Image (tube, rainbow, N blue to C red; front, top):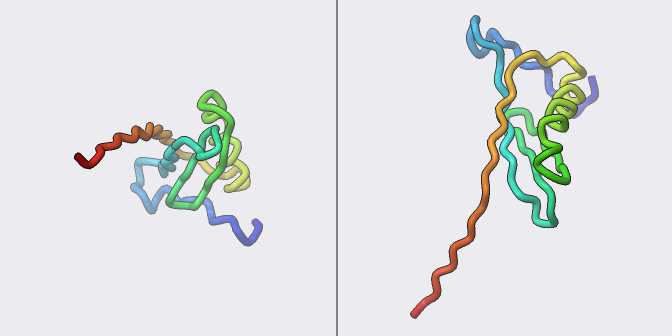
Amino acid sequence: MSENKVAVPDHTAETDNEPPELVFVITDAPDGGKVAVEGRYGIVFFVEGIDDIQGAVINKIQEHFDGAFHGKIRIRQYVDELISIRKK
């Protein structure tokens, strides 16, 4: 395992019945595309579009944990909406 990788989560740390769950938050990248961020293990990557997310998440997790992760993956997508209120 390389220096920047974290050990595979132990499901017994969560509960004896439930496997671990990784949560990715998807936001718009400033230069286009999407950013996927998993905060617990610091996994971050970029993709061109939302259609690429599911496969990219699986590939990135397999890469990060050397194919040893078994658990759930939750993907949350947020859409930023900018509202501007001007001073009268």
